[in-house]
Image (cartoon, rainbow, N blue to C red):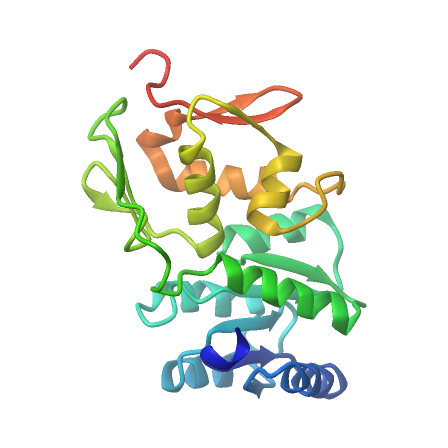
Length: 239
C-alpha cells in the first residue's frame, strides 16, 4: 500500500520524536517529510499534498488545532487524513481534536508500532479513487433529503455538499449501508477504526456528535439507541 501513496507529513517540534517517526515510516516503505512548526507544515502541505498528516497538538506559534482547521479549509488538503498527537490525555482534548477535523488521536508517550498500525488503519479509511463504485444512496425523509455519493466520496444535504473527513464519511456510510439495523459501538469501532470492539473509548461518540452537527437537518436519520449504539433510519420518525 505504501508504495502507491504520497508522502506522510510529520509535524512535531520535538526533534527526537520527529526523527524517530521519519525513520520508522521510511522503514515501512512510506515516503516521509517533516516540519517543526505549523506555518512550515501548511506551506509544505500546499506544495506537496501529503497522503496523511501526523500532527502534534502543542506547536510553537500556530497550535495544531489551527493547523488542522486550515488544512480542512483548503481544497487540496480537506480530505487528507490527520492523526493528532498530544501529551494531553483528557477527554476534552480528544473532543477538540476530533471537532477540528482529526481522524485519530494518539496520546504521548506512544509506541512507534502502535502509531504505524494507526497510520495504516486511517489510510485504509481514506478515499483512494480505485474502490469499486457502489453508486449513490438517496434518503428523502428530511427537508431536501440526504444523498451519499460513494463513488465520489461526497455527501449532500438540501442539495448542498457537506464537507466530511474520511472517517466521518466512512462512519456515515457504514450506518447507511446497514439502515434500520442497530450498530453497537463495538461494531463501529471494528468497522470504521479497525479497533478492538471492547476498547473503552469515547471515539465513536465524539465522532458521531461532530457528524450530526455537520449533517444539520439530515441528522434526524442517525438515531441513538441508548445503552447499545446507533441506528440509521431510512425514514426518520416524524418525517
